[in-house]
Image 1 (tube, rainbow, N blue to C red):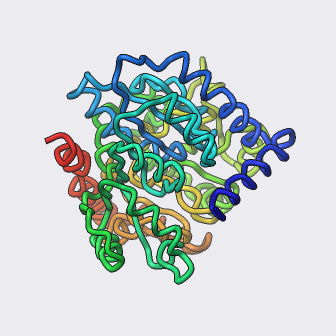
Image 2: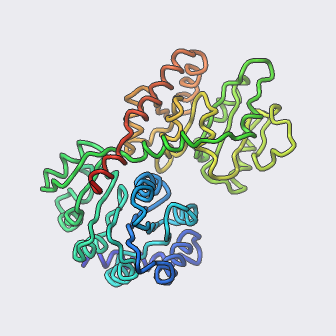
Image 3: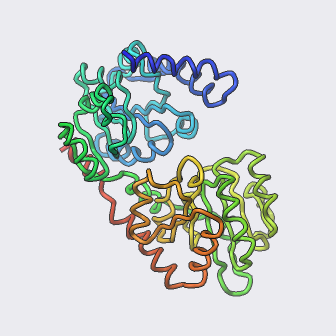
Amino acid sequence: MMYSLAIHLYALVVACIAPFHRKARLMRAGQARTLDLLRERIDRKAKYIWFHAASLGAFEQGRPLMERIRAEHPEYKILLTFFSPSGYEVRKNYAGADVICYLPFDTPDRVHDFLDAAAPVMAFFIKYEFWGNYLETLKERGIPTYIIAAIFRPDQLFFQWFGKAYRKMLFYFDHLFVQDERSRQLLAEYGITNVTVAGDTRFDRVLDIHRAAHDVAEVEAMLQAKTGKEPFTMVAGSTWPEDEEILLPCFQQHPEMKLVIAPHEIHEAHLKSIESQLKRPYLRLSQAAGKDLAAYDCLIIDCFGLLPSIYRYGQVAYIGGGFGAGIHNTLEAAVYGIPVLFGPKYHKFKEAKDLIAAGGGFSIASAAEFTTRMDELLDDDAYRTQSGEAAGTFVSSHAGATELIFKHIFS
């Protein structure tokens, strides 16, 4: 009861701020269209497997399993839902799903309306998605329900003395596929034993991306050697202003280094902020046509979608977000066998902690630490090579979660 009331209040807050907040406005408008979209596009003669991802990152974790099912079980169609506009707006035209829409708020009436319209035969939630009314109703309707790539920690609400009502959600899953043994043991302490340690499907995803990576002609042109020696290249991905304050001064001090930077947000104010800090020749990707790109030292990627392929050009990668809410995807860079640097807020990201332990990742907490680490990587080729190989091996050795989950469900 309290849970449903909290969701109602959340929906009310979104409605109130929607006129002034773009993401809230997109979410509210998208949810308002969901039922009509389902009634229009759902084929009543087909069987749908429903995948729900909160955001773009969760979608990438679910994607390998979606595509495996689509390839080997074409008798099923895929329904994909998002909660966040950051996922839906980027992937609303994803060809690997048959129907894509926003997920309505988790209130009893909305849940029943959604499930009546969608009529899934199976449901997958990804990582941290726990919607009590959806899970309870799926259980009541006998629809097999799973969570994949999940991680559980003792400090989560489920495991607090006051969290019994929320812990009940975990018993609604037919099976829980978790990333690590610690999660399995924690669940077992509370009587939840329908659990498999499968690992993280993102490793499979970044290996797929690596295999499908394509050339980026503008980056290649900028990195053409002027003196016969290839320039040392740093690729900085998903950066925020706090990251740029750390890495740009170091770049300025190293004329032998070239920089490809893909900021997390590419609105004009952010791009101008980056440019104002650069004292060496720079160019935006959107302005590259007809230019002698080898004459520039920094290329600013002012579009989305290219970053996973661009990491291949780096001798070292910097991943943004670690001075804010948390780092972005480290695996997209590590898969190319290069050292990966990031800020101090990484402790909630298992793959980042494990990457550090493997010797392929480095956390830095200040501009001085960043400069010191970069000097080591610049000056010591053997150290840089060893660190890069450790990063690549770390990724390749953790593949296989998709295969394990797929076989468990369909064999």
